[in-house]
Amino acid sequence: MSEGDELTIRASGASYTAIHHLVEASDSNRIPEDRWVDTEGQRKTNKRDLLRGEYRISPMSVEGILLMQVIPSNMQNNSDTWLSQTEDYLVNGQIEIIGKERRNLRISQDGVLHFAVNDIVLTDTILNKMYKDYIEDLFNHFSKKDFSKQKSNILNIFDSLGENTKQDSCILESMIKYGKSFKQDKDSSVIKYAKRKGLALGHYPICKTDSGTIDSFSKRAHDAYPIVNELVYYKQMHFRDPWFVDNIGSFLIVIERKRK
Image (tube, rainbow, N blue to C red; front, top):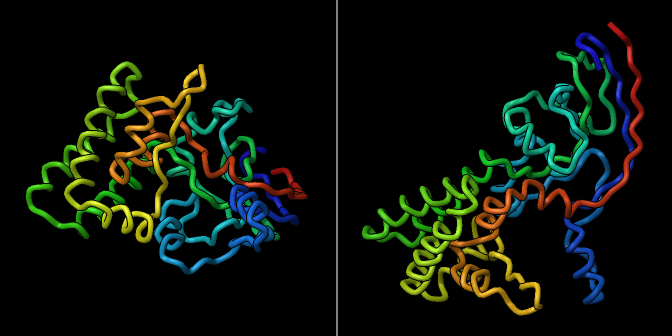
């Protein structure tokens, strides 16, 4: 598209934002917790979703609504890693709300149209903010003065994750140490709180070696929950779209274009 073009966009179809919930519901022969939604998305009211909504591509919009953004052509490569090259645009760029229909939309720059449902893209900016808010919530709930320095150290460690692969193992060992110390001090109550309240983040995944045995490091990281959690894994692995790859859906998008 070119700057000054005027678009009318109509979209139909449906999406489901967590395919693993469908699988789990099918395996246990029960009705899924979530529902399929059309291009208008859905508004959720439970605490976890209200808090997570702050980090979506369009924070003020409902989950799953169809969005569009113009990515400059020089940043478009059609590969699986294009997200990591467009952080500034995903965080700060102009997001257009499409839903079922958007009329007379004026394009403000040359580029390629990218469509997505309104979910969370884990750029470094979003990861750092989510993890900080999560840790702040934990430490505020389990307040203890001698943990204030630990909290600062944990956040600094997380910020540096993913910058140097060779150093990450040492960095993560420090997080595991803090995680075990924090959990031992509060025993099971902190686990229950972390799963029930706030962002309800999952554990660091347990991985297997090439020989099929459990990787000891990932097991220790898994056991250092909630300080070491799924966000630590995503940051370490530069995994930008774990929640997007969990989406499933199909859309028909019709675009009418008036050239400038």
